Image (cartoon, rainbow, N blue to C red):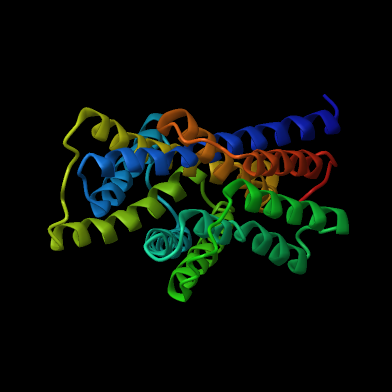
Amino acid sequence: MSDDTRASGTAAIGIALVLFGSASMAMVPTFAKLALDSGTSLLTVITIRGVIGAAIMGGLLVVLGNGFQAPRGVLLLCLLSGLCYTAMSYGLIGAVAYIPVSLMLLIFFIHPIIVALVHHYRGETTLTLSKVALIVAVFAGLGFALGPDLSTLNPFGIALAILAAVSVTGMIFLNARAQREAGSTLITFYMTLVTLVIFGPATTASGAWVFPATSIGWAGLAGTGLGLGFGLLAYFAAFRFIGPVRTSVISTVEPLFGILFAVAVLGEALGPWQWIGVVVVITALVLFEMPQREN
């Protein structure tokens, strides 16, 4: 097998992982809506999804025989990553109380641009003019696909969305650093555990444990945890194959998966401009991935 063939196969694995992770996480909002519509509380959804996510990672560690031991430096990185994930969750959830979800998502997905720029200035990847143009095209396509409502520009809501974008950027860099010494499953387990330790007591202290009243609600609650658990695992595992920059840029398909999933499950409809946005994003990502390069 030639080096080019091996590199192509490695890239294909990484792309498949990030697409699977993005599709899994894209289902989370729709599943969460099903759970919330059946009467459960928001804190219950957040906490239970953490329980399921941690259980998935822990189960995989046991099955694979990897154990739960990690170097102290990795545990510190996981703690910081978990705090970033907590801040991201708070930012995403809090933002939608003040600004439309579409606007929140558009702001949140600024983070691939931040990741790419930081890696460029560190000398860890090279951003050519064409790559920059394609990343901008992806972002513009998201704007059309999401169709953000700009009539409600609450400064606090925008600040929370920016907090989420900055926090997920920090989480990406911390996880990439931790993967130099540990596997992605172990890292994601401890990162998820940190958020569970924070949200679990908060849910209990506020008396917010409210569970779904219907079987559809329970399915939504379970789907939220499963989508998040497998989504995070696949997303961070992709770092080893294609690097954080390509992973974060390709992950911009997540809102598209979310839109299509909402169409299929919730019966929502897309307008012409949204379909144009979907085509622009997919086309730009395909062109972005065509050159062979190292991150």
